[in-house]
Length: 587
Figure 1: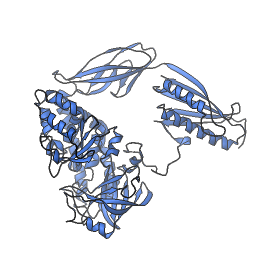
Figure 2 (figure 1 turned 90 degrees about the vertical axis):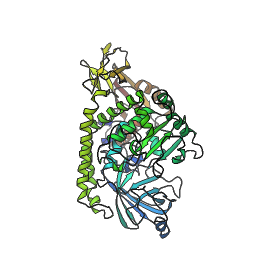
Figure 3 (figure 1 turned 45 degrees about the vertical axis):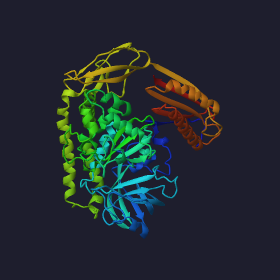
Figure 4 (figure 1 turned 45 degrees about the horizontal axis):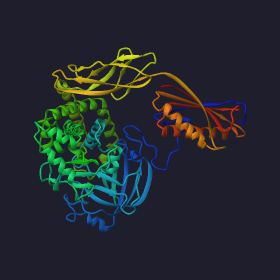
């Protein structure tokens, strides 16, 4: 159909900045479209870590590599150098490779197997070409899960760690073959490196790994037991400073000294999650499977690893094999942080709805797990271990919800009866007529009490603090809350595109940048575009309208302005290269 008199309106809705429907973005070559349930992140690597999909990893190795991966040439204390191999893969139904890679075996005392057993592997994508990446990553970590008959423990544990805010790896699954021989179901675990840390905005000075064989702790003289995974191997001054501070008296200056070289709020959260998930083989209980990461100022966080033996049973919440945790329990301010962390872990897990996830993952991996002839337990054991992991988690949750009540200072919601409630990390929107508001926090614990600050409101964003205290008054937590007072606004702008293209003119780009400052904190933005059909055919005009709408949306998104709806229409009264944009919003 061709007409310069007919006006056609088409709509597309934008959710979280991503166009769907008739304005769908073209798929890139990598990664392909993947099911979004339980996928975290929008980076290319996210496609690798969908726990509802079992991908395929095929490794081809020459005889020299096979020999190099055979005991006694390698063992649990000697991973050995990376050796040449070729990898091909099928990820979310799409084939990749072959590509030249390096491999070595992965595992420690309990999980290490040489190439004749069910090996775990590390695959170095940039072994030959230093710029090579596979979905944005330079290494793959393929765990053999020989100590986890449920195949679920790591996926469950790391999901809880990430949910509470700890920089922990994502997980997916892969069936692995070596020279055509099936090595069975492996956990595709996000490799612990600078690429993972970057997702959490962590820029490390050093990454130290601790555990077998030395089981190093943060005690005087134990620096040699920490392997340097990143940073200067001959300069451990930051680690020495942490160890020195940890030797202070916990009842006097320990908390002050350690707070200067460690993020104790993060560390107590890591320890609380270890114990809640029953991760007995971590730092707190066994001085094993943990990373220490320092930033440029030498301030440390602690991160988990090796969670495959979680959920076998509960672990004492005040177990204290690790020296730093033992010191924390003897320090009143650190003990308060730890108890707050416990409450956060419990409430976060309770809201995470993780039990249905474990059932979905179990169903997704079932056929591959049953076909795995290298696993070291029978098919009849898998359902029982999976049910056991779920039961342990449910038991931990039920018991912990009662256990934390006396010291729980977590806030469930804030707000008031007139304007509703909001989650602690979200905005409470109030109308333009609201000149002031008295707010209160709503604690999870029935015995906790909240402050009731009154806020005088100006248009836009307002902040206040709410204090939640436990009944005994020996534990409190301060929350920054945000209240947004709305006001009705509208802006109309005319933008020019380069003739017959989807590129905005330089002048229009400048105007868009100025406008974005006014729109960045808006609750809702609706963009209405009128496109002139000019001398184009109807079909060509529609195609150009779509491209221009996509371009404008991309520009707004890059400026942190996220429209919730774009509507575009053809009109004979508008020039083909001029676009009138009406932005209606409350802000």
